[in-house]
Length: 311
Image (cartoon, rainbow, N blue to C red; front, side, top):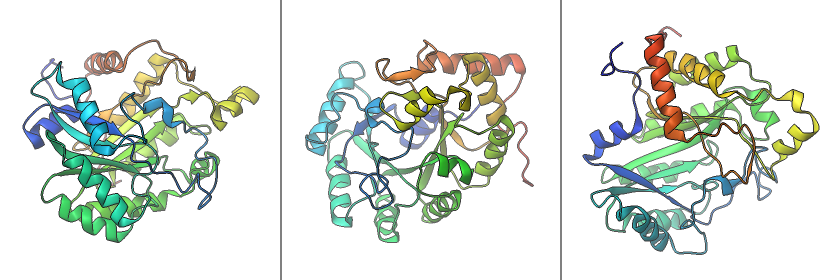
């Protein structure tokens, strides 16, 4: 397999094709909470969740959205003057609020010079049709990607991690959103307690049936202060954390089964060292990507090689 041959659909190439330039996401905190934290569905949130793991210094809910966006742009602009930006509402559930409140925050972010679109992270059970009406119109004038935290396709797993919704809710949300002509992303965690390798391969088959534009994969990470980290302390035998090389092989096996047109945004997540309990691989995300590519070349394989349309 030559170095120029297709391995997988990568996110940066997808964005350049859609927007015509190099693009960076700016993480924002819109000041939202989550129905799994405020008592609507439950309290305490998902057992794995600690939002501190992905909040840069410029991302602060006490700062106005436009200022967060401008500060984020300033952080990158000195290194990449030609860069353009996407407003990324990531922390907690960014469709959980009144419609006027949500629209106000989205439009404030989009008003900042250099912003070419918006990415909205949310839960599958928090997408009302009225908001989809607005997002459908918004997608006609700017780039819009709605990213759903699906995490697993197995209902027993979703119950165990206190997710607060089942997989059917994810299928419904993805299909309703894509049906409006809006790009849809999904987030999945590989290695959740109780999930075996055959289950993960079946998961890839199931996700390939959905009208997804993008997919994020990352390894289970145990983060200090979470319920899951406490569970690990009490019963580590319940967990099978991936060694690095095994994870790379699992990711490749997984993407071999994915529908070939799904855009893969990432393969792993990197949490702050002071918060990370395990696994600590000691490498950066870009280094892991290169290892995945190298191993795909060695295996002479590519995204969708084992995908079957009759699944």
